[in-house]
Length: 277
Image 1 (cartoon, rainbow, N blue to C red):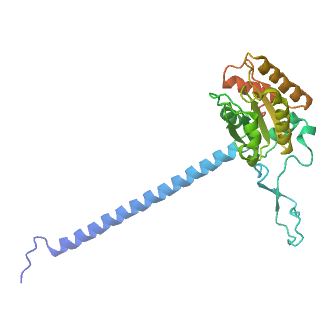
Image 2 (cartoon, rainbow, N blue to C red):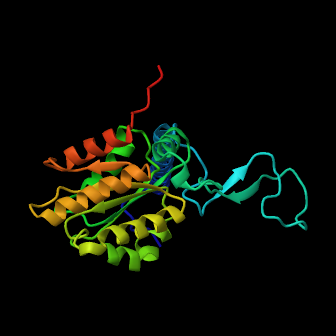
Image 3 (cartoon, rainbow, N blue to C red):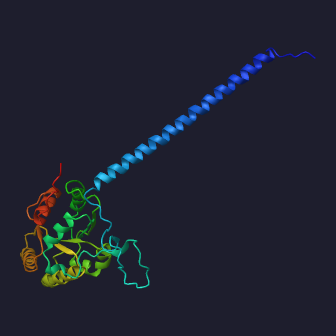
């Protein structure tokens, strides 16, 4: 029986081969695009890693706070376990920047300068009675990342506007100690200092407990109001700071958070790192 196809059999074979060639070319183009995307992702990842490496060039310690293990290069035993096999594997230890020396016996500025000059990331905690509108702890965190080139430092803001000292004493573990701070910034506002004649005793107790955590304590005195009691309590803060060699950031006369940061950095004598060529 004669075929009713309008195309010769030879033409049909050539059409199939043409379709196969077109399909093969399309598959090859798809594979090429896939390889190009993979190469681009690899290049983007490498660039991201390089950027992170540049940011952390001056801050490459392994330990963060006191609870993060740090490598000891000599491989010595650090946990007191005599059953641990001796080999060349680096051991882990818990970093304690305070050592056996109480911060009250060591110059606080010196401690902070050592932290700023070293590679280990530091934890800064702001606590106490901060103004409602203030954001200077967050802006100080940005200052650490940019001006001081410490992108791994952590700034924890637990300021509670209108909170008295007793609140911080009662919740010291939750608001502060659990962060294992290297530096504690105790901000004392008008409400914080409104504990009446017991203010000085409460403040000394709080400072003693903070120093017992083996952390560097910095006091911040906000501008007093017009009352005689407020001015007297600011004087008591200054006396305590002088007697115990505690840095005191006096916020009297500041107008905004930029002024607060400048006053803070000036009090701590913080200097940006020198860029080497």
